[in-house]
Image 1 (cartoon, helix red, strand yellow):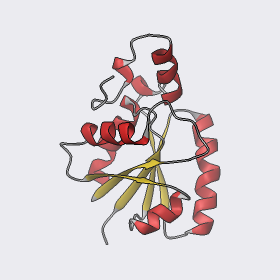
Image 2 (cartoon, helix red, strand yellow):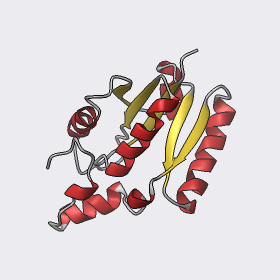
Image 3 (spheres, one colour):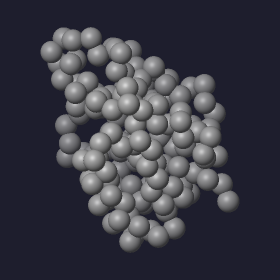
Length: 152
């Protein structure tokens, strides 16, 4: 059985931290699906099309990385794409508590799909897409925090 990881997020925008998690997870999986979750009730700074383009550019040199978008439950998207793992990055204990509750619900709905966590590399632990958007909105230089495929 192929080991397929589903790495969901809004990636508004994709950060160096997101990129680092995927690259460090590559040796663990046969395929990683970076999945842009689209929530029509949420307001994004960048369009889904723009975010997908940045994700694709970030991982263009990695054939084991596939990029998709989805709506609805992450667990249903995992089943659709035959992913048997959900990959998540953890920056701190708050992330862990939040992710743990989601993982427990997902486990109840789909016991065959396991959630795996990777700790964020220390140099990226303070970065979030929210803080990056704040830097951009206030005309700061967010480039050091943006994934390699992002060009503003």
